[in-house]
Image 1 (tube, rainbow, N blue to C red):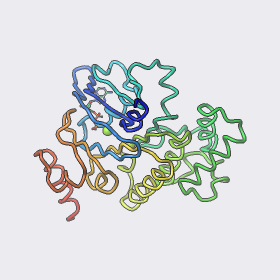
Image 2 (image 1 turned 90 degrees about the vertical axis):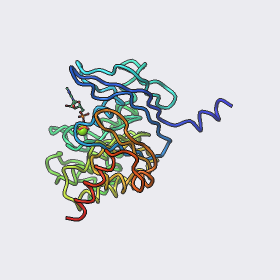
Image 3 (image 1 turned 120 degrees about the vertical axis):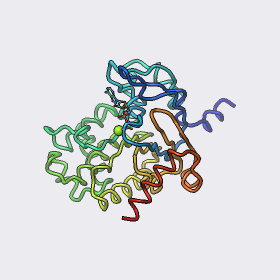
Image 4 (image 1 turned 180 degrees about the vertical axis):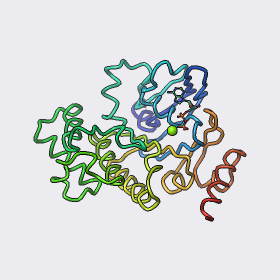
Length: 267
Ligand code: ADP
Ligand code: MG
């Protein structure tokens, strides 16, 4: 009975999450859940609290900022109760994050192969040769051509779009279950944006990932996500399947975001 319940229970349950920075209530009582393999968009304007939610999920809110309430149940465990050492084993290994700026996760002084192999070695305890082979395989998974040779290159030797691919390869290094993507395509040209979204769809299927896709762009939510959480000033204003929210937005804030998208599309 218990086993059955666990199998059907969501992979991630966030309940009443609140985060404050000095003088700012950045996230207020946010709740949502995510089934295994699901795609959830978190949409809202700049400053609405999206990145803070993402960082809170990874327990990476830097002091004096702090999580003031809530629970984050991942795989049946409340992450907020885990020790720092236990959390290190969750980050990267079970939950990975990608960002707008690839240099947030890529170190400029190591080759991309070394970095991905190091992550694999740390979390999966593979030997050097096996970890290097895994790194090359990840670069192939994100369609870096001549992956074996390019694994010896440094991050700056890749173009913007290719560097995003390398960052995705890095995030996939340890076969995480959940990928949190915080505006990973915002800084890219439209055609490269589409390529990266296509790639994320592909790796989601291949690696059986659940994905939280954070964006201010409803077009991306529509292209990638099944469900969406709309947030404004740190609070959830609307949530539901993307198709329903797009065709019948309930809040004036969501309608405003959608109008902005229509104007952009018309240009
Ligand atoms: P978004 O990702 O939606 O643009 P953020 O989560 O970055 O929003 O920010 C939410 C609010 O918290 C904003 O008012 C922002 O100014 C504030 N904030 C974010 N990070 C910090 C920080 N490290 N210190 C103080 N305030 C912050
Ligand atoms: Mg942000």
